[in-house]
Length: 561
Image 1: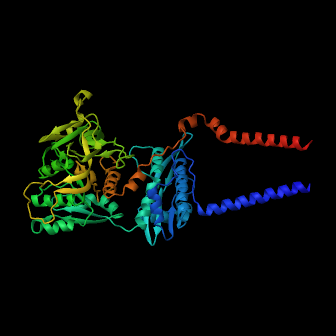
Image 2: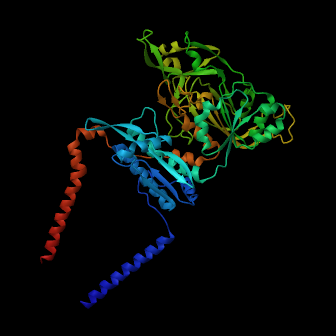
């Protein structure tokens, strides 16, 4: 008996010593195990780098708590699990879930306060066994750090998607949304963006939503080329202080001196984002008595420079059977007038086919009177980011554009070997100056004929970055079309372009992360509701009961002898 007690004591001491040793080793080594197939809880290296920048307490308040619809319950759980991962790597990160509708007496005040911060709710139709009800959800969070505050959108608005599909897309973007928000409020702005002016580019109010989004992460300033006429050297020196230049829908011809400034800016490493319309035509000009307008080529004097860089934007219009919807009046005029959706073929709706991080996982992107892009062989790497559908073709200009085209009947035979027209191209490499072996428009002491390694993005539609204005002349969300009520992914595409050009590729890679979220088929669940309940609830209880009875039986049998 004494020998047995000694053995038990030795075993106990060994287990205690082993636990102490494991605990001591654990203090020096940190690792979290992600057993999910798609590694959805494994943070990317970019997120880990951002988390390390949090030196002071950072609090995140998530407004998704209480009796939520099942889809949003899933989003809440995924958000909590991901934030636990962030917290595990940095104890300065704190988060809490709040129900803004919990107290009926204070709920209206809470809603008004959230509205004032730009946090708009989502009204959801909840279906349960054929019954429908309405629910209000705030899929938002707010992060606060050193008296700075930033909103975190948790629900991604996907055009034409169901609530379940939106939640799936939102879960895929959760890590990006949270990491991007933390990055904005913890890391000082470093990169600078110049928005070029002076050649009839888009006014700021038509780019307001895009500029406001960019201002959260980068320093942005207008840069006019007017001074090139008097002092081109100083203009070039001033422009070279910016990391990126955005040229959004110029309408006035560039002078040779202005082109040299832009050319040398690129040769010295400046990134450029071109949004160019080679055809003059506007959608608003169609809404007249005749319902027609004239589209004609626009001479910007940029063709020779583009040709040297390895691409050409043709003065044609892309006509695509995969167009965007447009509302037009039908029937008799007056009280009997009705509005109906038609397919507008001159507004291609492009779904990215490329797997490049800039466009991966993006939805439909809306163009307006886009122009074809040709790529040329010159040693520069070219990646087609966006292209028209198989059933598209070029329409030469000048040409009359009429609303009557919505009634046009076509067949696949009209689009044999005409489709897949490039509309946006990424160019990477060492560009050569357009003034190589040519007379310079102005003397330049630091002229470079061969540029450093660089990159640029070309988009053959200046309206891609243009936001519409509401009745009060306030800008609406970039990508939202008031005529059809559709929201497109133009904003995300533009953000990705800027991030990529400014080497913030880590954030793009997070955004393009692929997750596999298995979901129940609701229709099958409703058809076999009782069976589903029995399997999900009754079966585990039955297994536990059998195990308990078996354990009791074996125990009695063992000790009854």
